[in-house]
Image (cartoon, rainbow, N blue to C red):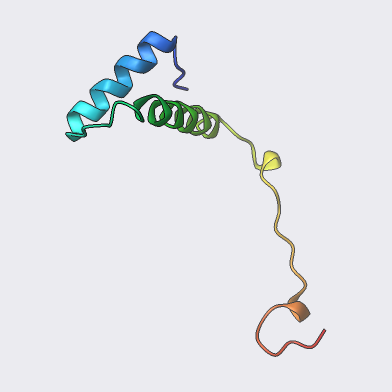
Length: 72
């Protein structure tokens, strides 16, 4: 699992990514964009962890409520 070490490392990764992509961020919005990036990375890291079948929710449906024209 990938995790951020500290804010300095986070910031360097963000700057390198924007540089590679050729992005020029407005100075007044760079902090907000960085915070969004860091938040998304944190969420993505949470998804990249081992899971068992028991941790996945089961989908159950009532076939009489699915489809067009189903009377309820």
